[in-house]
Every structure is written in structure tokens, then in C-alpha cells.
Image: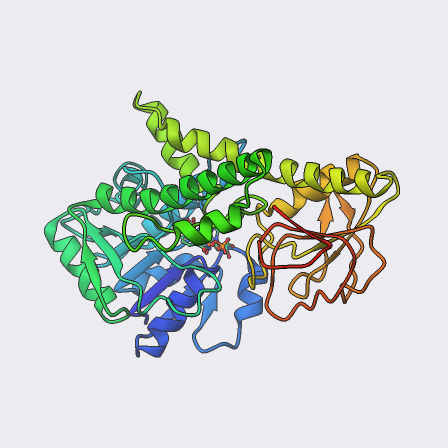
Length: 390
Ligand SMILES: NC(=O)c1ccc[n+]([C@@H]2O[C@H](COP(=O)([O-])OP(=O)(O)OC[C@H]3O[C@@H](n4cnc5c(N)ncnc54)[C@H](O)[C@@H]3O)[C@@H](O)[C@H]2O)c1
């Protein structure tokens, strides 16, 4: 019945299924979470929790989460999806892994699960990997106009993977093999992690040196070659930047070639929420007292204009401020409720005034700051006498 079955209907799978449906493919969405299926039921394409939908699909794309458990890569969802697909795979199908993971995952983890019923990869079905590159909240680049890296177990698998995505995106980029495609994704995100860590480290150093890091960035950013501007902030959050490089590091250690730069970058970014809290507490002390001080945190998502609080640095900032005795509230139009360590952070609909300190963590469009009193601006977007920038 389906040209395409998408397994995992989250941030990645949902837009893919939408795009394929819009391109005229017959799509079925499969998600193991009944709540996700219920929420999407009645949408443009059928959705189900039953992976048996795979049995009639030409193409099966796996977009399940690859997070961390105990600080280590967690491939349980990939394994569960692989088993489910393996149970129902029909001869002649193409199976694509889009989930981010370390080089070798498609061949070492997924392939054996798909072959469990006796079908042989590259012979009875095609196996491919095309890591997702979606950038949530990016209005300029979406699935269709972001080049898509494609790869296959065999040249025919790669060709079929390319032909599938050519229906959905403007440009496909063939990788030499599955491992190159998997590694390209980890390099992209590790590059971002490392550069964010570098500007964060420079921001901390600039404060010590009495140098305005934002002006340094403005100046350095005028170099037309060899420099790409990254901006400091309260730390790297979300589902990708703090997570994907762990896949790289763990694999690197396992093969005896540790990624020292990536590991150092993770440590620098992890320290940023505590650094921001320390700066906030210094300002509060300068203004009088910390215990009982009323602090408003503005923007608790991991990035601006995105309603996603996964791995958000706001958590560490709130935790440290509370530990010092401050009374913390938050303002974020995209987040209806926010709890840290199980304790709700009170929400205010507007920034208003009367705070001992406002800490700007994310500058969502449309949030009006007005003149709330002293502000610690971690994004370098505000000016004024009472504004203290990171
Ligand atoms: N979110 C991003 O911006 C982004 C960008 C690039 C790559 N990725 C990668 O894409 C993958 C998916 O990420 P996401 O953000 O869409 O995750 P998500 O958590 O938003 O969605 C994943 C969905 O998969 C479902 N699921 C889990 N196990 C399943 C199973 N066995 N069978 C069927 N459904 C299952 C979950 O219920 C969930 O709805 C991850 O590997 C991630 O690293 C994410």
C-alpha cells in the first residue's frame, strides 16, 4: 500500500513524511508512541503504531531518536526499529537510516537485524544511510533546499537511495560509502560544537581581560575568508550539538584514537550555564543581596524561536541561581511550563519590571524586554546603562 513508510514521526520523520506526501508519494507514518500517533491521526497520511505497515513499502526510512543514556550513545530505538523492520521487510525494499550515529551503525547494528529472517542486504533488499540535517527554526534552509548526503551498502543501494531522495530534495550528494555518510554528519555537528566552545571560551577570557567580546566578533567577522562567526551564549543545547559528538567521542575512544578537541569543547560548553549563573550572582551581590533576590530568566529553550527545551542550558542556570538562594521565574512565549529538578519555575507572561536581575538566555522574536532594570544579556543583543553583556 505505501511507497514510503517513515518510522519515527518526530522533528525529523514528520517533515520528511510531509514532504514525501506533498511530492505525491503514498506515505504511511509509524511511531511506537501511541500519543504521537493519536496527535497525527486524521492528518494528510495514515499513521499507526503497527510496524506491519512496512510489509508493503518500497522504501522504509528510519528516523528514530539516538540520544544518550548514562552519558553514552543509546541505540535502543535504532535496534527496536531495526527488529520491527526486519520482521516485516519485503524483498526488493530499500531501507534508509536517517538517525544520527557513529560510523558503522548501519552496517554493524542495523544490517544484522534486517537480515534476521534470511533476506540478504544488497541482494534481496537495499540498505542505505542518509543522515538528516534539519536545522529547527531555520527559515532559509529546509529539507528540500539542503543538499542530502546519500550512501549505500552497494553501488546499487546508493543509486536507489539517491533516486528516492531526488524526488524530495533539490540536490543529493553521494558519499563514498555508509561510513563516510555517517561520519560526515558527526563532523558537521562536532564542527559546530567546537566552534561554539571556542567563542564561549574566548568570551570568558575577554571578561577577565576587560575586552568586549562582541566587538571582537564584529571585527573578526569582517574577514571575508578563513573565519566563520559563531556566537557565545549560555551553552549548547538541543538534541544534536551536545549529543552527536558523544557518538564520535565514544567511537573514537573505542578504536584508540580519542577526539581530544571534541572532548575539550564539550567540557567548555557544559561549564557555560554555571558561568552565566556566576556572572548573574556577581551582579546581584553588587546590587545588594542574592538570597531571596527576584531573578527573571528570559528564553528557556535551547535556541531562539524554537519551542524545544531538550538539553537546554536554562536548566543549569536556574539550578545554580536557586542553589544560591535566588527566587527564579521565567518568561518564554514558546514554553508553557518549565520545571527544573522536578520543581516548577513560575512563569510570567511579560517581562515587566521590578526584577533584581533579568537574565536574557534566548532572544525569541517578539519578546519585548522594555526597561526591566539590570539585565545580563548572554546574546549580545541589548544596549544600555543597565545591560551587562556576556
Ligand atoms: N531534531 C533535529 O534537529 C535533528 C537534526 C538532525 C538529525 N537528527 C537525528 O534524527 C533522529 C531523530 O531525531 P528527532 O529529533 O526526530 O527525534 P524525536 O524524539 O523528535 O522523534 C523520534 C520519534 O521516534 C519515535 N520512536 C522511537 N522509537 C521508535 C521505534 N522503535 N519505532 C517507531 N518509532 C519510534 C518516538 O516516539 C518519536 O516520536 C535522531 O537520530 C537525531 O539525532 C535530529
